[in-house]
Image (cartoon, rainbow, N blue to C red; front, top):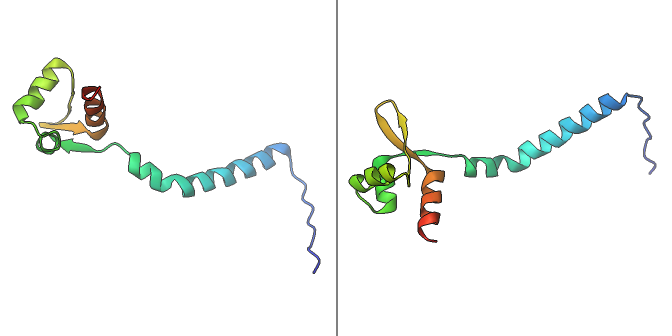
Length: 93
């Protein structure tokens, strides 16, 4: 069975735009699950203390020493999971 041949005339910029759009679509589709996995999540001080198996006082001391800096959201003290991971990695060296 013969395939139909289609000839299209377009400018280079139109072709580039078309390719860019197609590549972006594939990237979004393929990497969406990975993006969600690596998004930085904020957790409370209590959750952080539990995760690190320390007290809230120890978290305060870590902040004072500059080892684990919190993010203040209004009156809440939150910690980013990436900051916790960096702290744990530096602690294990």
